[in-house]
Length: 514
Image (tube, rainbow, N blue to C red; front, side, top):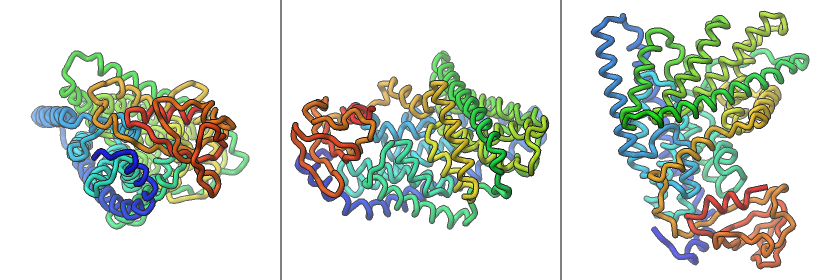
């Protein structure tokens, strides 16, 4: 629905009046779909475990090969039917909010739900969080179109839906909101926060009515690490940071190998299903998203050798599963690899008498999950808060912060890009995915000027905003300025920028650079 500039600016002035109501509607819709997806995946994972627990005969093996091979073909067809339904869904949501993608929300919901369920039934090492985020975002877009909102409010509702999706996936409403701010927008805006937190809380309420009041993980940290053991936390952060970089590079390498394969894209999802059959009957630790694997590691200790095998094979199988374009995320597999890395460090430290205090096995599993997420995704606040909400314990926030920051710095030093940024860049290379449907649509972009921004203490005339973009309003403290060429930009200014949709990504990168 195209609108002229005057209407766009008028809607932007009055948008706060509608975002609360719209956030409630999106929370109900996105929460319901994401919870249904989580419930169905739980059922599919149980089916998967039952399938691989049966006695292996030649006839049974052939039937599984045929069955899962057909699953791979169906997933390939679904990706062809809805190209933006492939993989995690997080890069797609980021691209949608940048104005470079235009997902068909109805096709995406169908393809993501069905494809993700088939992947879980076969045992692919993929998580539920990415699909839940995209399902929520697609529901947000569906609600925006139903309510006839303009393209600017549509993006806020997509953000709210994505936030609700993560909240429902992990029963983590605060993390859902932080995800949108830290990972997607990378700045704070009340217009983003209000509908996002409303939708997240409603989605969490729906989730708790279905899955109960308990946190996502059944275990918690009972003994806090003493301050004398914080040297181990720093060492763990370094170890986890290196493993996170290894995971990112392995994932991208396998994705590159898939592109070189001389077979049609719709047949590539068959490959991970064949690996799933192999692992299902030989080493089932690497099957599925991995939530149950983390639970089993806590309940039943395994040797360092087994942990190292889980670490390496899970990294490999997750990369093979994701690279095939099958619908599924890498958030939860990342947490699994982090938990295993923490277990490896703890066992080695105790075996060589570097750590002789109380039983801290669970501590190191929890800490390493946060560090791994910070290293792979490069969102340390989200990494800390998500693990806190999933374990239901705030007692170890300080140690979580230390390991997350150290792992983050290690990944930065090793010059490894955040995984979703790398995946989005690769998707943008595919011209078939990039949309030009709304190129000339006028859009509003809000940006808060950081203290290290190149724009600070410069006039608008000196900044020379490109791409015919126009700063139409500046909010400073409690007042609003209508700017002209002599207006000086100050740190903390909230800029309202009018531009064309086709230039949104470039304008956002320009105003947010240091």
